[in-house]
Length: 177
Picture 1 (cartoon, rainbow, N blue to C red):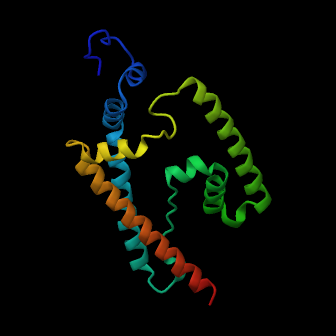
Picture 2 (picture 1 turned 90 degrees about the vertical axis):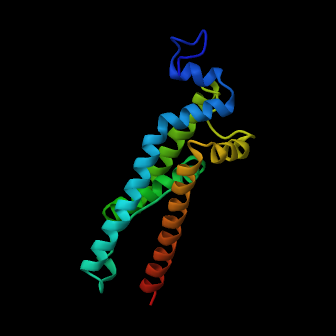
Picture 3 (picture 1 turned 180 degrees about the vertical axis):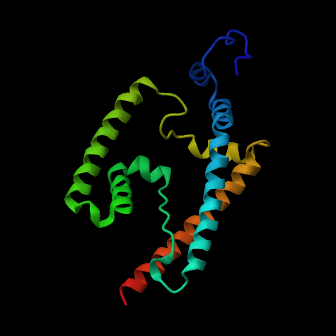
């Protein structure tokens, strides 16, 4: 960062615009790696807390701590549905169904409008999905510094998402008995 000739005073954003996609991805990943690691740590801690909560009340169906996970892809491609899930998870029956739907639709319209306006302004590798996404993912997986920890974090996320889906299926099956 700020080491290339002519880029000594350039901003992070200007670097991203000037770099090829793999170098830009590497720089953006370095910038966000702390957040990614903190997310993984949070998931591990949530899992531990859930186990403690469940152990303290093993026979009660609601004795389990609820954790809601929404993938970034779902949040980007289905903003209204994702926001509805957030409202439903947080407020349950405290917020009327019609209000959850209205607010979710309002959020989706706002999000899509902002995304569209930013697309014309910020058309670089950190915005949206481009045709070389799969190649960039493979590059990052093979990158010697970031590949190994990101692969472990991805496996952790997959494991937690699987456990969450199994837990939800069991909870739904139990409520329908």
